[in-house]
Length: 111
Image (cartoon, rainbow, N blue to C red; front, side, top):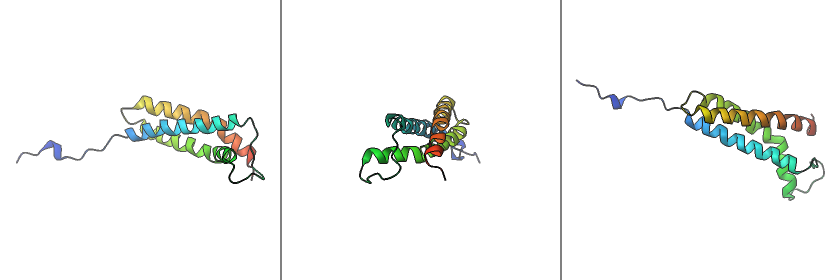
């Protein structure tokens, strides 16, 4: 019998990880831009829950670092694909914003 070579299951390339890394890098840059746009006036006590600007800044500072870490992980996983340039750009974007956003979060929200 002749085996059909198309019936073999191939492992898909991790291109979605590289693309997701770039997207999360861009989202984390937007989080840093929201912090910079607030000009340092981050209201973390006594703000109105319906104040949209305050909530965007709080989410950016408190959770923006998470997008950077996930972007780094996905970028590293995406390095195995043919979309290495996308993975590298996602890693760079995520690393830069992590270096900016994590110290800001630790400073503004101490334990």
